[in-house]
Length: 499
Image (tube, rainbow, N blue to C red):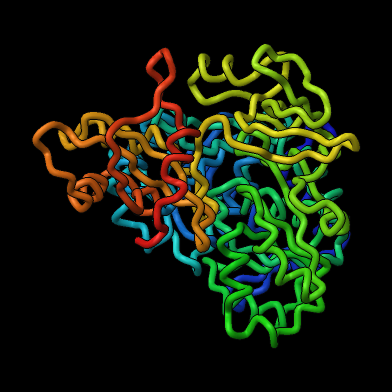
């Protein structure tokens, strides 16, 4: 499939040999050919080597979408080092925890995050690099990176309230790229418009990195803007782009949507959560099929694929196992269930994580004989099409971001406002879901929504903050005293969605 001695950057190097002048990345009016990208990655690797980055060392990156993020990942792959992208939406305190846990050797940051990076990194070396800086070093770096080396450490919020670092090898990202190539029928003639954040495996690995490894071009947006996306579809004529439900809605509701020429698009892909049919309908009506990718940070993420050419005939399905993946749907005892019966989805393939960073217990709990437990509940029909029914771990997916209730509940537990409280997701037309606090007021404490919402200021990133507080007389629990979150969601289902 690939050479054991091959690193990720070698894929770009080979395309630089075959099509040196072909476009690789365009960003804010500046185009980079595959030859220039290969040279740039070499310079980044040399620069990292000059700062004593060796096999296994972590290199943290904090910033918006920029070609440098991709170059750092590929530079790390040449050295056998590990790229640590930091979610730029998190607070300093959240970054401090991740940096303490991952222990990177250096932190590289965009100038707009310079103060934030310095506050987060403590005594670590900080390098603030703007768009114009050419990284260089006097000596040419060795190339010890191999397919079996870990290359990406991506943190995902944990069910206990603390993030977990999913460690992915170079071979896992290569396998993911092959899964993606089949999902898109990818060729060097394709053009991918990327706006989802590269600090998530979705924005980085569903289309962007596979495109470059397959010789295709990428137009990179610094951040999402529906008007800019529509303008660049006409100007640059991409063949593919990747969405989450909230961004699909933002584009279809934009005043220019009906008049924009979308004819270059072979299709769109969507992921991060279940995709409502109403969200994709405006695109199908314009002749643009919308497929789906199901997966997780731990699966790199492409595990189940609904190809765009299959999407119209299988509404509600997330597809079938991707090329290199196997899927099981199991009961609570780990036994396979039959067609039409719901169970937890398990994934096996060369794209799953090697381990949770420094967390043997979480790794052992999440992987059984090579099968990763997704925590999602789904079923397959008689023809093998897979449908997601629920999320076992209660994660709230809002605008493409994972929000774990435990993290919010830890904040609530420190307050004397509640006798008991929990956090659940509620459907939201704009964001897909939003977190809601449901609680019982403590004795002699009058319900105060604002006081509850203010608990999160400065503690958690704003996108994690609950959007409403609902007061109840008691929370439903099972005989063991555990809060039954599905009943909590049913309890608030009739509540007004007005904020």
